[in-house]
Length: 263
Ligand SMILES: [Zn+2]
Image 1 (cartoon, helix red, strand yellow):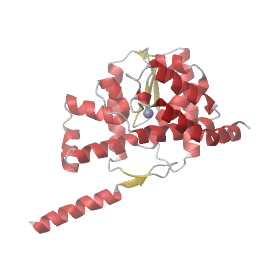
Image 2 (cartoon, helix red, strand yellow; image 1 turned 120 degrees about the horizontal axis):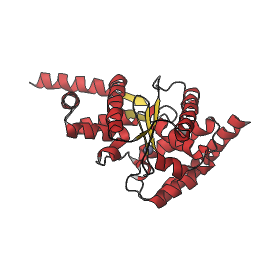
Image 3 (cartoon, helix red, strand yellow; image 1 turned 180 degrees about the vertical axis):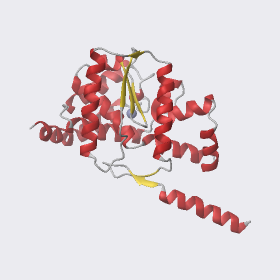
Image 4 (tube, protein in one colour; image 1 turned 90 degrees about the vertical axis):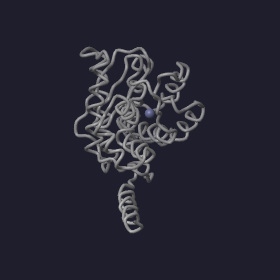
């Protein structure tokens, strides 16, 4: 029995060791044992079910504008972080919804509400929002969160069974872990660490694409004034001033990137 237990511990330990990866751009070491192919599939399935329950804006100026901005952001992420594992194909959808929200799922699926387009206003600020969402995907925060959640839920075997047998509640937890919790009415917000990391990487990606990063502080202030209820960006930030402080800290680097990109 002892021998079996030891072997099992070794198996678990070796999979944990091989699952330690670092985040592109920040170099932060973290545990992530979710295979990217599985995350991409979950993201695509989750996106489809969100769209089934949403009013999608099919054509028009908002769609053209958001697609063009997202295209520049994705190309910027590829050139700035060439070692990052990014989906080959991205799908960007504008959703008719007054709440200022946006989300991105593994597999390169991005949704942005009309309320967020209105609140952001300028192309620069929309680019900051999309940069933040692309950064969550690039850093695979969803895979890291699901790894943590599955470890807490009793280990890999249980997690695998849960993923295969997707009942309504499991599906909601998976969507929430992928950053779309607001869409399914349960709250499993990104950690403060992930939000700060997405802010930092997203701002650099937007600046490298030639979008002015200086609007970021005003953008988060407007979101804070709108209320935290359904806004992904605010769910883990009870103190907006700490987010503003973080943005001020990284702004000189983002400005240097922006000036180099627009010289
Ligand atoms: Zn976020």
